[in-house]
Length: 465
Image (cartoon, rainbow, N blue to C red; front, top):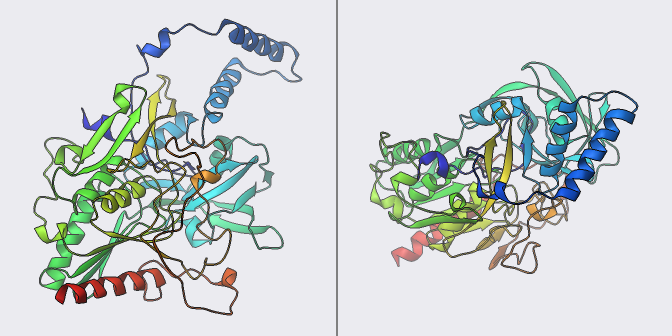
């Protein structure tokens, strides 16, 4: 199977200024196109088409009607299938390089308004304080109630340096908020790392891109040099990582798993949608000529104690990595339950510069778990003090909350499951947690990271005994 066919599109929803994923396929000569067409339904379609052309209050072009019909078909399927106009299709192809223009905000549609899934770290949206769960009701002077999601995203895109005003509704705020942002050419740093203290490394993956695996390998090599020897433990931070390239998820998993370990498998109706991806170079390198950047890593990275931090903003590729490391008992998963996006989208070019993004498969962890509308349940639940105790905190929007989400076929209940095996609550405080600003990931005030570091030190003590 060619590498291009393995690069599944597993990010979240539409992005104002970015589309992150890649999986192109041809749509001609598919067996499904030979099935009989529904004559009665097509007759009704042509009648409506003709009535609009002849009687609508204003003239409407054929192109607009057909394009809107295609978009409507896809929007009615699930939250992640969509029609891609020429601009969106072009952005999709370049977005995986980690550089794009816009606000840096993942969005979906709920009850006719745009709902924020997640701001992307180090972007205008993130820096302006846009939060997961915010409802965008107005863009500049335009109300967007009832507007198609694609149209809303187009309005949020624009020339870098230009200003845009978003009016949002936020839980616990008495009135709408007006937030001014400046559009930018956004360069997302996929991998961030630092030595927390002697023997303990911290790696944060903000988004899975083409170079994520290679950047991770460089970070791990630097740890060994800075520490002047093997590490005692490592924290892999996947919080608020919305996903990206499937190959990136396989690469990150492969850095910590024995060779040929199963990372993820997918199931769909077509043969192209059925894959088994293992910790093997052919499943994460971009081409056969590329050097295996994981090969030179010390074997100790396959065995050293490891904690993976996740939250409800961890989705898709993040969940694949967390699920693989959890199923192979390679790492302790800590944080709160993840987003629960267990589906793969394929981009199908239409031949006129446009395309469609179509959900074609579900993915499963090595142990056969479906993450769809469930997510990964941490081994140890650790709440962020900024969101603990609230029904709908900063990172509480999940796949199961999205309209028309796919059900989890392995469970009769597609709502998030049990909290976890163990729960570690933040310290008691009389302060209103809704007003606490979340600590920067990786900072000295990062409560969840501090708990992960304490666990690694405890493991080190137990191993010594």
